[in-house]
Image: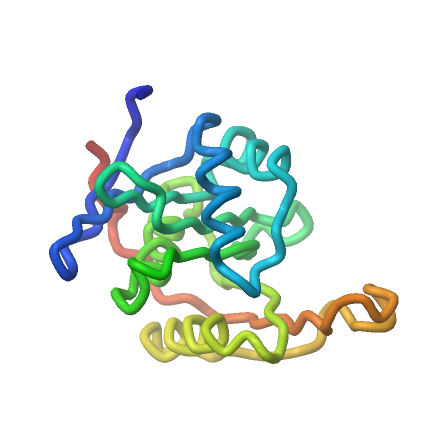
Length: 183
């Protein structure tokens, strides 16, 4: 196993979650985790590999007992560098209910590379209640607004083959705490 920078995210229900940047060898585990988390859209294994390598600085994997149990991928859009776009959030069934998704997002935002981020955005289908609960909860916790608007329409952008993706825009974000200490 390659050496990795990591951060402890605390003990919850007997498990310690290690939050860290992904590496290329995480690709298969991330592909399997996303597949086990419907209704998430499954990306190709190659896409997940690129996220684990080329976009590692804007992604986080959570491990418990050496297994990937959480994943957040994202990026700062070149046209809006003050924004962090959350692409995908996956938490295994065994790790749910422990605020892991929120902690992974907070760890990403606390990284020095994300200094200057003032807003968090994502897209979510109307029926994905778990994701709406996550992002509404983060906005409440941070004491800031969440604006909802259609971003990619069912007919306009998906030719009727996918539900409308609604953008959640949260911000302005509160001042970030110092980054989680890296081991």
